[in-house]
Image (tube, rainbow, N blue to C red; front, side, top):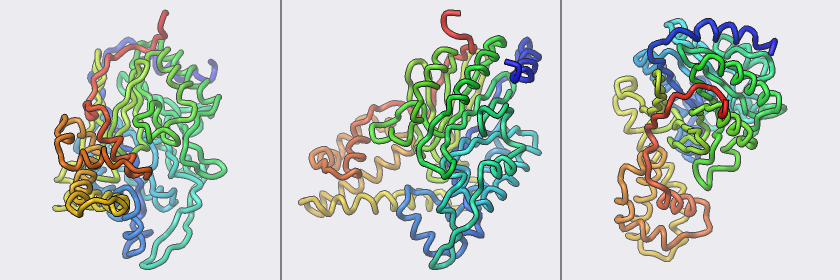
Length: 411
């Protein structure tokens, strides 16, 4: 426990003073790309059509909008929970860090953890009009240097994660990304990090402060088709610690969709990616008795006129490009296929937006619904759409939790 003395002193110093509500803002999966690496590239714009709807070719607008949104909300702290950049480009990291410094200089604490797109990326590229070339990525040590002002306190055992006190809340930022020797999509928490997490929780329990965890990958599966590489490989170990020490909320990303899952008394709020419509961010308000998580979307006044409409249309276009080949193989009329395509685009947009449940059973009354359930094929796209249509209907935007202290059960 010697290495946690500074944390003990800091927490105990303030443990007797009840503070006002603490407001946190989470932005995840920004996937920022330095404009100089894509401006004027028709190749890059075409490549994005084969993605999931990210408008990375408008990174300059998104970064400016994020800064304006943060300044407008003016939370006690801003948390970026990984996939800060498109593919770990050094230029992207440098420009983003300059934006974060301006936010921090305004009096808002800023904390970052890496995701699976942030370091040692062999596909970090610069795009010209019709071609591309490799560009410099960053190592873990370079990441630490660039984001030094925004990394939480640590003792070395939590890699690029750590802990931070914001108001009457202790943030536990857990680095579960795999980036050495090269970046991998999945996530895993090393044994020494798990041990360090336990020590922090043991220390915090003496203060009765609320603990909120932050990871890039999910702790809890959010969908049948989103488990492998989306959930931390050893999530059960961290989930067990959080159950024991009554950590009620984990903030995650990586899925790109807005979704809330719960297991064993722990809630995992996967905030939608800021890089695609409707450009989500999480707002967390911690009072004496409750923790309220709310997913918000980018304010229209912070982007150029028409930007949000263009972003929504691009998301629908990308969905349609994936679904159309599946429909072409079906022996159906063009009208039936049109109904299926329209429904798939509408449902996918609602799913990513966290609003699928707001329509109740209306989806089941759509003529495209019966066609999708009757013509389930072996394609991943068909399984995905059918799975969405059969998913539980519940609120994926808001959740209010009891603000339990970090004392282990039975003590």
